[in-house]
Image (cartoon, rainbow, N blue to C red; front, side):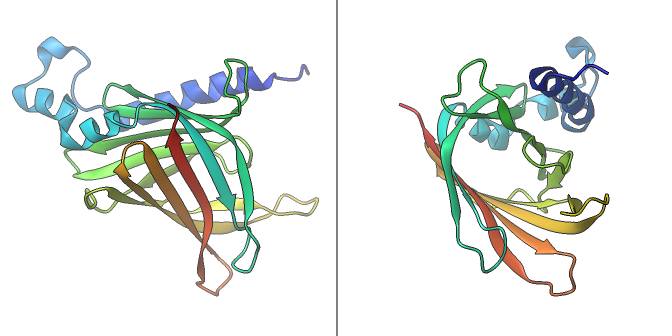
Amino acid sequence: MKKIKKEHMVAYLRALMLTIILPVFLVGNVHAQQLSVAEQSVNSLGAENAALKLWEGNFDVKETIWSSPAARPVYNTRLVARRQMIGSVLQEFMYAAPGTANAPVERIEYMSFNRIEGRWRSVSMDIRVPVGLMPAASFDRGQAGKIRLIFDPFPLAGKGSSVTGQMLRMDETINFEDPDHVIKEQHFILADGSGKSWLAHRYEYTRRK
């Protein structure tokens, strides 16, 4: 069997994610002329997704990782994020710096505010870890400059030779009072009976001038 190139796999996964998320994010008939007034209103950006549009552009990203509650932080400053709106959905591709056209994609995320549900939805995937698609949603529209997303539980692969793993719960807080400087913080809870939450991941985005 021929080895699948990483760029081909990324293209396939991107197409798969769009196939999955577009029915969730987009409301109404695909033919604009057949949309009702209500559907046209829902299909417009709205105040929340208009705020996402301010995030478009290229950002330098500082990643901080805590592998356990007692672990020392590990830093990665060689990441670049490219964001653009696709309709009412914000697409984010994170690349290994310098973020050239041929640079490998590290992380993919799509995010939008569902105006019927009155809450945020996202789906993301980190190419660097084998956890698959990670859907998430907020409970409500959030506060000014802050969104909190709750992820569906997902398994972490074990370290041994057998295919085993451990379930993980995660939430993410996005602080974006300044559209040129956005911070995402992810808290983990392992399914180990402790119920202990810890800050496990932080992404700090700074817009490139």
